Length: 145
Image 1 (cartoon, rainbow, N blue to C red):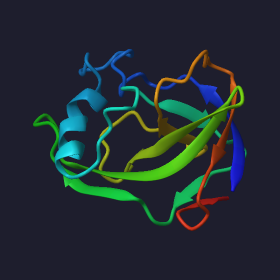
Image 2 (cartoon, one colour):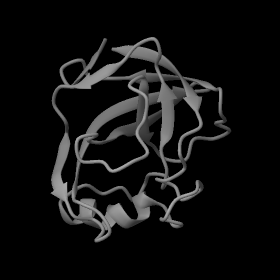
Image 3 (cartoon, rainbow, N blue to C red):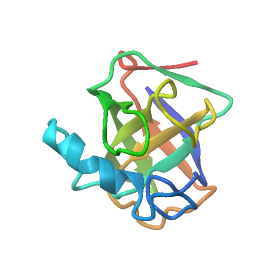
């Protein structure tokens, strides 16, 4: 399934570009834990593309990777993370990506609206806020509502 979305500004916590207690970004701290359990994120940019698919929302049906109760830092409770493979198309260039979903049930703060997918991808040339992007999703893994 294909769906269009718009790149919006996120909290900047994953990348470390926003105001947070993680100046290097949460992804740089989490990556070794994901790597240890079989998910190599070394080819992805250390930040997320925040893609607003409004008026639609989404539901993850079956994740490719699940990290339950991952204690990636001592300063708060363990979190659960889900990852689903996806494709991205921007300026007629295709990229392989991963939907990055820190479960709201275990997340402390920096929640996303229900219309926003956070996506990990390799560096995307010339991407900017407001840009339209197309996602390719596996309908057996993600339902768009």
